[in-house]
Length: 400
Ligand code: ADP
Ligand code: ASP
Ligand code: MG
Image 1 (spheres, protein in one colour):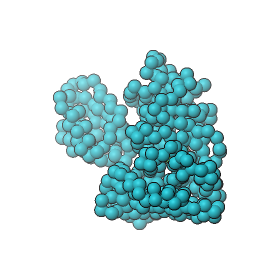
Image 2 (cartoon, rainbow, N blue to C red):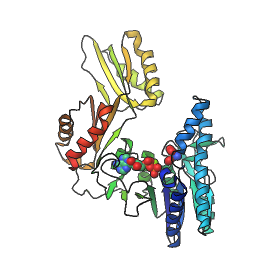
Image 3 (cartoon, protein in one colour):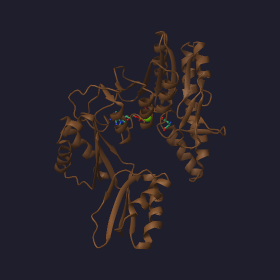
Image 4 (cartoon, rainbow, N blue to C red):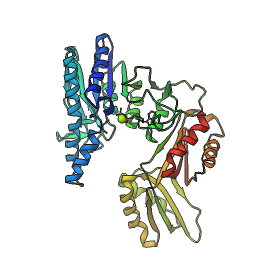
């Protein structure tokens, strides 16, 4: 007998028909003699709708109250799914995050899982019940509800799989696997049969939202093999694991991230310590910095630009104005940019990957304003309006 963890995203349980469809996938798995723990997200756009509701009342609501509100979305979907499974005649119980043993730190809105206490889960499984757990939520030391950040249900599923040493962790979604680009945006995107944790982590971090990046990080840490597959089309998905077939593919995929702001400080003094001052103050405020560009100094001044998440832009500008406006430097932020990236371990052993990417952008008439590279990624910053065109052009250059 195997223990299988199955996670269903919001679109997979968006309405009554889809909830019944998911109930059948789960009960088929159970019928085949498996123990099943299921993690579900809130239905459809529920989480976005709840955020909008909150904004109508208080756009500056505290993060604690936001978490109190947002956890309600998953409470609805777990109970409805359990009712659907009851209607099919199977033993089932739904549990909120805290009931399933999810304990987190106190970073409301972005909590980290400290521990999954598995006693309750094990007790229910011993009684041969299908266990349905609310994704994306836990409890902190003050006994307050917390959420794990957008897309956090993937992480809940991996955490349960790791804690229970599950045999399989399946992430069901609305596409049939991980593709070389977003299959909804790029016509001839190809499904990958497998991908490594490291590649998937970069892919997710750089914008491929099909898996939450923290879930991939956790899967790698605890060696949980993931399968990404469709809840609507029954076919083999994509496996995420330590070692993957290269399939002669130099790169695995192309992705875009539009949640980017470029911050520039123009005309700061060209003296030692300024970059340190700048980035240490930003780090103190927990602002994550990505691509960094420094100009060649001239006339005793220099410019530094970097990118960060859009919701950090205002804080970053305030901090930098505080440091540099005294010396006459001008700080600005620009949110009309997007980051386009290619990901793949294969590029380590090949020269010419960067030139192929830049060539494709040149032919599409797209200007690059910043570039950054790592062992398995190349990212460029471009005009946001051209992001989809850029992804298609780069995808075509590598995948035809
Ligand atoms: P869920 O609600 O199941 O968590 P998400 O919306 O978070 O689903 O993720 C699935 C979506 O990710 C797909 O509908 C697809 O448009 C998008 N996506 C972006 N990049 C990729 C990619 N490279 N491969 C597959 N899907 C991708
Ligand atoms: N419902 C949450 C969200 O929309 C968590 C998730 O879907 O994974 O972000
Ligand atoms: Mg998701």
